[in-house]
Image (cartoon, rainbow, N blue to C red; front, side, top):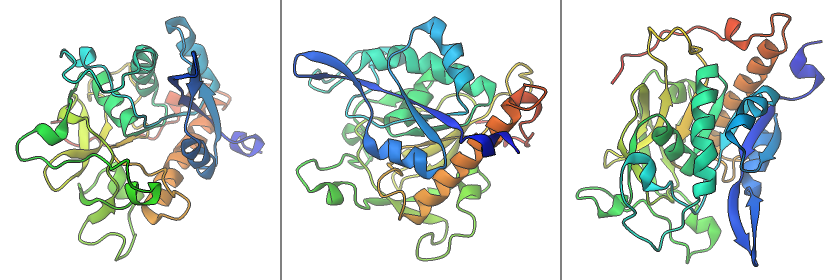
Length: 288
């Protein structure tokens, strides 16, 4: 019996810190937890961790899901001052997810970043963000309307264009019209921040009509012999966890993530005990 038949892969879900009443709590949205289970994995919500705890946490798991959040990544992490003091921040989450991301990706651990999680990965790897995409000349307003019913707020907003040959393109291969038409499909949009400079080693997977990066994956340099090559990671600016069980695009994304987590677990628990020995080698696309 294989390792993934003994128990499903464990996926770390880093929590946000919120003040509820007069006290701080660590929280994670239910829709993310449900989506991890949809992927065939066991969600493990993790509170803010110390630096020396990160390796132990990674040793427990076979994947990471970085959730969206009302909070923004603090601009100090990409060399800027806060431009709008009214917007929520979560420095406690930033402090440990950014180093966690770097460690996980170098292990080749499967990672799925959603909205804030998408932005965290870019910043963790040295990229930068627009603090307000809607204030940039020529760019759309990508924010959601919180005054609408949630079904409308999370409804389809704009198309994205797939980049041929990437991880997202492979995950969605074979989806027929009207879901994917001419390499495009519809997504929701609820973000104020967005990619300004894409991190080195990141490959664009999808673009919005205004050119804003909507999806990317990261690949270590070809001559980086210490990082695991070929691991699954995918970062999405939209919210695939919303109605993930019924949306064909979301179903494919979480299936690909779950399969990658199961493969990583099987390799991790194999007699060699080294996932890096079993991660499939892939030919990396040209760097930016």
